Image (cartoon, rainbow, N blue to C red; front, side):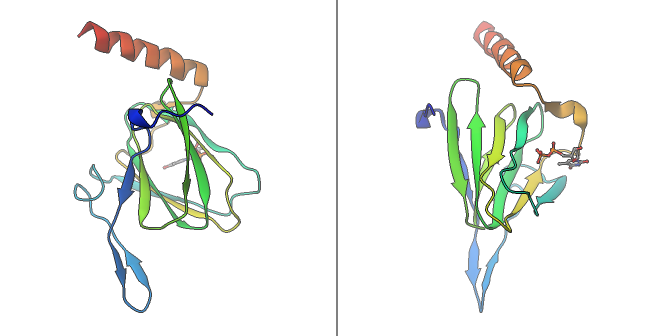
Length: 146
Ligand code: TYD
């Protein structure tokens, strides 16, 4: 897998952790999470060898926390691809707009918590990698023309 850490494909979001007869972690919109939160969802009871994600979002930004278990997230910006393992409830990753992502290697009993900047809308998804690369190409051209 090609890696390019200078591109900052992986952006960790570390949130506070309080030890008090157990562990409490918390996060606040616009303080720890870099957007207003409009939605959250959980992914759990994932079957063995499942590969989830396989899409990018045009407008939605998300932060993923693995609150139990372990998972590997593959991130791809159209130029490079990196894999990151999440297994700590206080360490999330930012999934910015137009980042192709795949979730693999779900350990049994893994629970993933995702907070999102937008309400669910299917039209926000880019579900074909070919379309993703094409859209990224267009974005690069637009940026270069500015
Ligand atoms: P999807 O985002 O494709 O899941 P994953 O990336 O984990 O494979 O969503 C799976 C299904 O759930 C799809 O039919 C859309 C639906 N869904 C909602 O209705 N609301 C939501 O907030 C999300 C995240 C998914």
